[in-house]
Length: 158
Image (cartoon, rainbow, N blue to C red; front, side, top):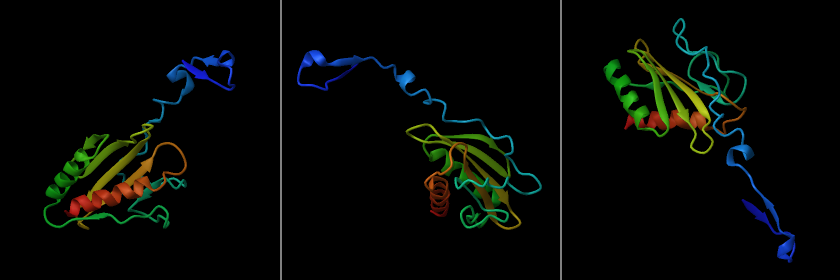
């Protein structure tokens, strides 16, 4: 129950009862649908959409979407294991698929529960881990996907 006082006279108060879910019908619906184009096809992750809420380390991405892959040295399996540990330590993260060359995780935002799909493809020939991080909903991500990949890069190098 919310009481609004617009006048000095308390008898003029207006009461308004608002259901939490009724007032914000979109809460809980910010995850969006899981994309169907994810995964590695012919050694490539799916390209980014035109919207600025995606970064990728492969392909002909423009400056807005392009990001460097994650470099590693040594054993590829150990690099992927370290990446897995880094991802598991991050908040609101769920790993949905993990193979010897691919990792797919969902990251949910703290406040509204927006979900980003993040993929990693181990490319041992180049000694890199290719990455794609994309928001499911909205237009801009305010740089969240790029920052996430850079945070992961920093944790991998520690």
